[in-house]
Image (tube, rainbow, N blue to C red; front, side, top):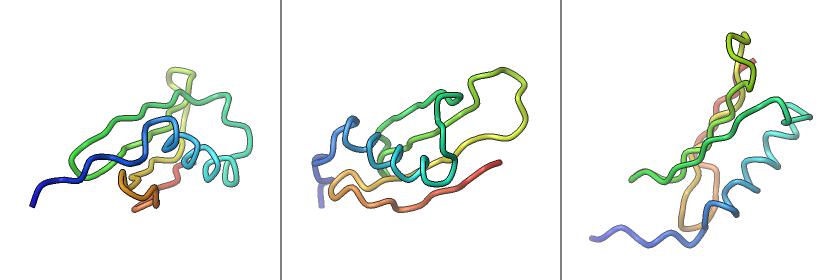
Length: 76
């Protein structure tokens, strides 16, 4: 079995993660966002933009073939 090509690109995955994160955190302007495609799916991480700031943001694993959120963790 060969891995399927991603149907959802980074822009679509970022939109999915942003919509969910905004429901939990409201304003996301204080976060840096990293997104990368790994063998298990898209990893999207929201990290505080201010160095040394306590807490963190949400982290997502999103299916690259259908855009569903496989897992998510919220940090406060």
